[in-house]
Length: 71
Image (cartoon, helix red, strand yellow):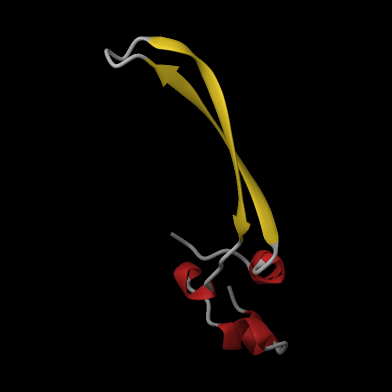
């Protein structure tokens, strides 16, 4: 997996720590697996983000020189 570009990573870091709402839609089934309808679950929380999971370090992202902007 290639790592996301620097601009994407900076946008994710800017959003980190802010409240977010997650909506998930799923199929409701009987115990035997027969589908009976759809449901939507909405949850609220805080976005947690670690650049290391995507192959970046915070030092690289904070580096504004060309050398730190490699992809």
